[in-house]
Length: 164
Image (cartoon, rainbow, N blue to C red; front, side, top):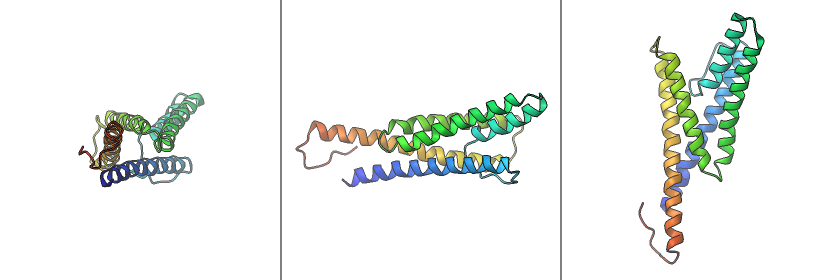
């Protein structure tokens, strides 16, 4: 039972990191709308960038629809993160979905930062890898937990837990 508890803790830790990252991303977006001069690095890049780029290009091309598209992409992404958080409590497959989505967020950030790499971006990368690490640990724990429960189902009368 100790192994199961450890796996559940890893899943909870991954989910908590996901929630913290999502909340801080929402705070970053709110700070942008209220002209705040700060941004938390422990956040997703794409939802924030979609709004900022939408705002910049809407002014540049004098088309407010571009800004609305940016808001739409941001809302969709944040909704997927939040839905993934809430549904991953019982359906651990959602943790895989948000891990892939956050990995794509990291690739998008790399694509944007790569041409003009600045050392201040290292903090963003450190926190992105931090969140991604815990999400991968959570996905790994869900796989091990699934395998562990399959082993128990195949031999329900065993007294000794089978190692992973």
